[in-house]
View 1 (tube, helix red, strand yellow):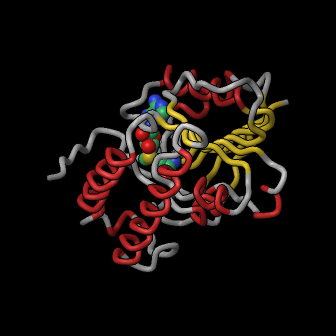
View 2 (cartoon, rainbow, N blue to C red):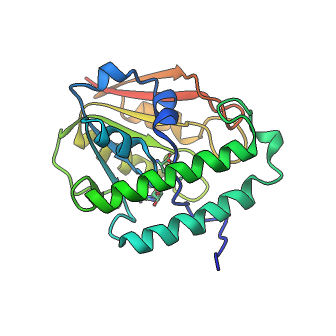
Length: 229
Ligand SMILES: C[S@@+](CC[C@H](N)C(=O)[O-])C[C@H]1O[C@@H](n2cnc3c(N)ncnc32)[C@H](O)[C@@H]1O
């Protein structure tokens, strides 16, 4: 029996192709990169990269769980996703996904790919870590990606969490951090934390806002690049 909790941060998983679109990535630029997905959730981005010989690691607060527990978490949160999406048609563009059925099918495939990869690489490429303190070395990844955590959940993660988490991601990144989306969950406007953080971190970083070719939640097609000076 699943439990629905609309206030928590769900253990969801977007696909490799969604990541490529959300973060404006080209396959050949990943060749010589060491990448961190933070927080990776049940995404198939890391599984795809590992299966194809790329250097990628994912960190998430739930990666200490066993494979069976992670499977249960995926099923539970997937049902919540279905509940939340029913009746939300007016808030999404059916573009990347052709319709709700396509969304469900793609999400199931992603979960399956993630669980297989998690079973193979748990503790090695899937590392438990709780922001804002990652168990990772300074400057150890060229690129740190963060999808659907910061800014989106500004109603439940406060300014201090955003500030400390961003600094932590910049500590482990040698070159760049990318974040998608920059809009909040309710409404399509940018998070109110964004200008304050940009101001605070501007001495050491350059901020570039890019429009990306990923359309699902209406108004969410901006990605933030934070480049270390
Ligand atoms: C909505 S999911 C997004 C997963 C993935 N990035 C994607 O876009 O498919 C958010 C993830 O953040 C993780 N999370 C939430 N708070 C965290 C924290 N303080 N430290 C690390 N992970 C966290 C959750 O466990 C969940 O897997």
